[in-house]
Amino acid sequence: MAVYPILLLIAAGALGAWSWSKRQARANLLTTPLTDHQRSIVAQQVPLTRKLPSELRGRFEGKINAFVSQIEFIGCNGLDVTEEMRLSIAAQACLLVVNSDAWYDHLRTILIYPGAFKSRHAEHSGYVVTERETVRTGESWARGPVVLSWAHAQQGAINDEDGHNVVFHEFAHQIDDLSGHTDGVPNLNGNQSFADWQRVFVTAYENHVQHVQAGRRTVLDAYGAEGPEEFFAVAVEAFFEKPAALERGEPAVYEQLAMLLRLDPLEWG
Image (cartoon, rainbow, N blue to C red; front, top):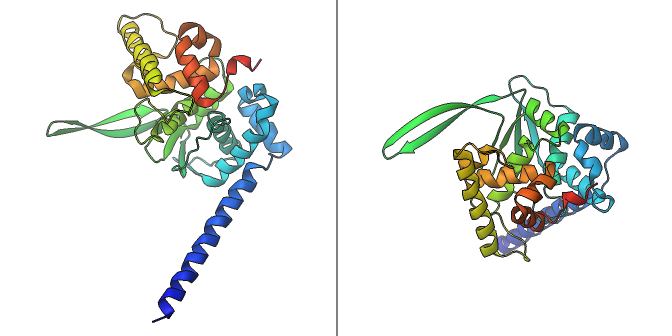
């Protein structure tokens, strides 16, 4: 009879040791710098990273290491995944969380297509279910995976001033989903008020929808009118790639994102 408690203790001890070992391995990754070769790839593939303040660089490189270790990158339609692809996508994803406590806890897989890909989605209207096929450059699923077009992911990173970046967009959805819902309201920092966030983003979103419907030019991509979750994602894109324009056009949105991500790209030279 005494065998069972002993077995339970052994199992608990083994589980505890495994958990400690896993945490320790991640802690080591977070303090490990990139090699010179990797650093060169990141700078070339994601030029925005060259502007990152020096005090954030160590944390940034450690998070890239942790991300690459955590994620399985799978090439689709015959694509061979390269080190450049892994580091480019990892660097872009880690820019969003470089100075915050947020992390992509539930993500384990990224699917990479050579270019735009077809995606099927079911639409429900009462008892009627309609399946539609659309061409996409990126997708983010709750709890993963993230699906990306490499052609668009690479171009979005290299052109870092046009406000369009599919990796930023899809990983903004991943951050949004950490709250349990992809609805444009992510987990906020302790210094942020839910009421303030709602007031700022609901007002900005409603104004954005009106401007798009009227055919007016907008600071944010018109796709943000598709829903609050898309508005949040395109706002994140602009926050990193067009910070001055976003701050001028939507100062309250810029302020909320700066508090959420604990970053201020306006000061990145």
